[in-house]
Length: 268
Image (cartoon, rainbow, N blue to C red):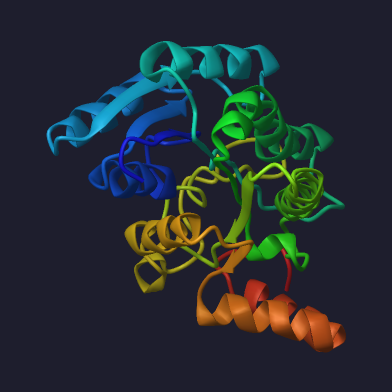
């Protein structure tokens, strides 16, 4: 990965920040994106102190024009693009019968359309370099999580998009990775949207028992180096995907049971 130009959307915290550090420590040149300038500046300063080559682009992946400018900025800074990691994402937590449709639309705009926009405008350079497109999906992209209508739907859609992209690019040398972390310690649950669009504020799960963002980033880094097709993380995550394939009714019941145990779960 030395001297590879890597764009990481949503790179100022959580898995995105950990990926920036992991790739940067291996000699990659990093461009992180995000909506909040202060968070981006803090991450850039922290990683530059570790001798990582990194710049930031302030923008919103859900806005198509921002993605055009993002790709142009990477080329201006580094001359090309080798790897795009579609990491930016938001979650939500509410029953479908109660959620405002604007909440679902906002999640889809970021998690699905944001990844499509970023890929669209980075792909010409990535194709030229026979590089990689990575989508940070989720176990929720394999089986529906109750109370996560928008989130699961966006990840199912992302998985489908990456599958199409991989097939279309079979003879180009471009690598497409679908990376599916299980529950990982990050800020995504704290910023998850409630039924009316407000941020949840506190995580309903025990974050300290989860895989760390750094561990997750290490596995994703290795998968990019090895040009793997799919990465499913955590034993619980792999079990859920396996059960959903062979015993889907049992998987539905187990997922319902696990999600119902959350603090203030929308399902009982």
